[in-house]
Structure formats: structure tokens, C-alpha cells
Amino acid sequence: MRHLKAHRKLGRDSEHRVSMLRNLATSLINSRDDRIVTTLPKAKELRPFIEKAITLSRRAVSLEGNGSEANGVHLRRQAAAFFHSGNFGRATMTRRGQTPPPRSAGIAALRRLFDELGERFRDRPGGYTRIIKMGRRTGDGAELAIIELVDNAREKEAQVSSRKKTKGSSKKKTGETKGAETSSEQKDESANEE
Image (cartoon, rainbow, N blue to C red; front, side):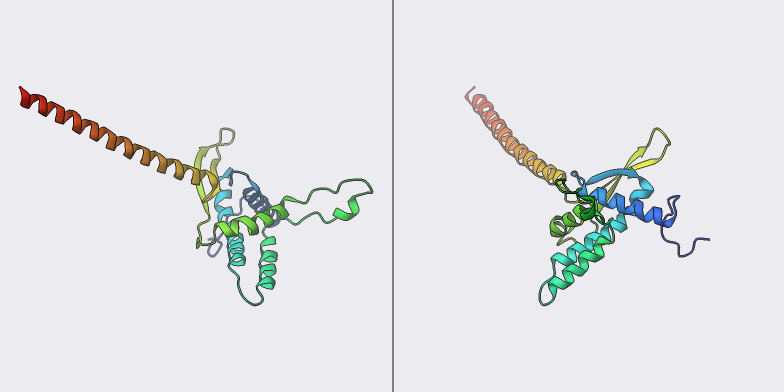
């Protein structure tokens, strides 16, 4: 029996599983569309993993008062455990006249997490991600899913366009009803004249 065994093993040992979740989290945070496609069990495992990191960034944004900088650094270091660290041999690998290798994606993800996403989700008490099922993959039949961050740019554009459509349709309806009223009034007048 699997009593008190909360998470999925995903066919991997623990080091491989944690590394895979860190890679998925980094990909999700760094993606331009705020969404990635993966299998459904991986998406379900990634959701609590990434939401804990976003909660840390939310706390860092809302810090105020004495010692807030130290607490902010502490929260940033805690969140760094959810991503892979940067290049360790960065300084020793460069030679004179060569450009240094780029920082790793984990550092870019951490920067975006605390600069942008913490502010975006400041007033949201949880539920930062959404999982959308896509169906089965043709090769192996695995269930695919999209995991995305809520309140993204596409979502906001869709809300604005739907508001414009509803406003535009209400204006058309009022114009159509006025036109119908005037035509019915003209019919009544012509009937009265006869």
C-alpha cells in the first residue's frame, strides 16, 4: 500500500525527477507564451512545485519595514533551490579577448520570477497555473497537457477583444431596434392615412 506517499515517481529516481522538475519549471518561467506542453503526469507534478516558488516571489514583493532587504534575499535564495544554478566555472573558462558564456536559464528564470511574476500575482492568493488536457500523443499514446501561467498576455487580449465585441454588438442592437421602431411607425402612419 502507498500510504503517505504523496507524489508520482514518473519512472525516475529521485535525483533525476527533481532535475526534470527544475528543468520544466525553468522552461515554464522563461517561455515567451507563459506555457509549455508536456505529459499530463509531469504537468500535475510540476504544478505544486512551481506554485511554491511563485509564492516565495509574492512574499518578497509584499515585504515592508525593517529588515525587508534581508528577508528578500532569503526568499530569493529559497526560490533558487527550485531552479538549476548558474555556471560555476564562468570566470575560469574565459580567456583574454573571449566573451564569457551566457548565464544559465535558471538565473534568468529567477530574475523573471522576482521582477515580473511576483508583481503580477501580488493580489492572487494561489492558483497561479492552469492545466489544459490536449489528448494523446501519436507515437506512444501518452496524454499531453499544456501547463500555463494564468493572467498572461494572451488571456488579457482575449478579455479586451471580447469586451469590444460585446460593446460593439450592443450598439448595433440599439441601432437595429431604432431602425425597426421607425419602420414600424412608418407602417402605422401609412395604415392610418389609408
